Structure formats: C-alpha cells, structure tokens
Length: 241
Image (cartoon, rainbow, N blue to C red; front, side, top):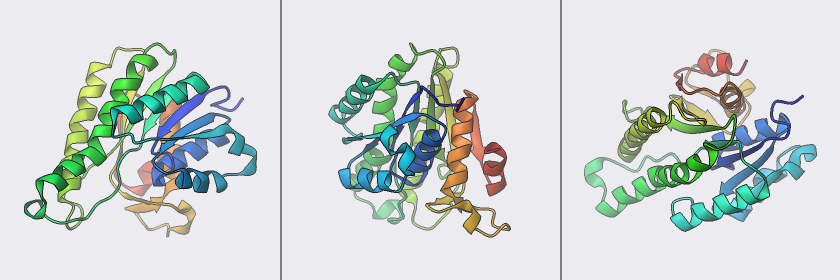
C-alpha cells in the first residue's frame, strides 16, 4: 500500500519550489494534498504540471497566510474537505534587498510579516487540531541564514531565519511529548525548480527540488521530532533513500 493512501496532507506554500516538490511526492505516494497560495493562477500552473492520474487529488485554497482571516479560511476549507494528518509549512521567499541600515522600518516589518508571521499563525491554528489526530506530524521548513551570511545583501533573510530558528526550538520543545510530532527540516543549500539529475554529480551546495521533496516526505513517514539538517547535497540524497 502507498505510504499516504487514505491520508490528507496540507502544504503551506505548496506551489513554491520546495512545497510543490513535497506535494507532488505525497500525491505520487497515494495521498490527497491541499496547498495554500495567494494566487489561483499559481495553483492552476502547479496542478497543470502534475501527472494526470494525481490531479484529482490536489486542492487549492487561495488565502493570505499572513493574516488571521486567511489562516482561518485555510483551516476551515482544508479540514472540511477531509481530516488532516500532516502539515508542512513552506513559507517565505528568497530576498537580497540590501544591508540592514538601508532598510526602512516598514521594510523590516514586511520581512517579518512575509517570513515569520504566517508560520506563527499556521502553527497556532493547526497544532491543537493535529494533537487530536493519531500519527500526526507538523514539519517546519527553515534555513540557516540566521547563523551565516551566505550571500550578499541578505540582511532581512538573516533576521527572519534567526527568528524561525528560535520559533522551531520553542515549537519542538513545547510539543516533545504531545501526540503530534513537530520537526524542523533545515535546508542549508540552494534548491531549484528542476530535477536534481540535471546538476553535475560534483555539485555540493545546489540541487533540484525533487530529491528535497522526497527527503521531506520520508521524514514525515518516520514521524521525526528532530531538527534535520541538509548541509550539503549528499545529505538530501541519504534522507531520500
């Protein structure tokens, strides 16, 4: 039997580079998937690229995950469709907008809104529900820019990544004994929306999203409660086995 047969997975940011790979992998393993997006066009484009045999098992919710109203809409529509066993939070996009001293207060606050607030609202909303679902998981996707200035002009990525590292620490500690398994899947390398096979075998710090998607899904199956680090490409390949 496919690992996700009879299961319903919600992927926040499920039309993005990593989220779409997670959603596709779950679908291919027999599950149903609901993804959130702020654009119907993005959902339609994502769905259109999926194999025809799984397109009937993917659903979209158009909502702003950065607002309480948006997250309530996501929760209501997703749980009404079918009970949810697993949530994967892939929220926030890359940014290289300059140094800290060059940002306005509005830009700083926007960065926090775009990359942290949605995580907080989603977690606060879904965790009490998942804690009543046997075998449930909640996976937080994070990066390591909070500990290392990995590229030029990523000041606000460093700030928000650091905030998310703290968020993950608190979330996992506070739910270590609960029914829902909370994990942090931390990606230290660049992931691109194309097959990993297109990258040279010697490449270590960039990779395709298909292998990352498989690795994340494997961590869900194992119901990890750990912080899982993908520091180099081979880490993802090991986790995807």
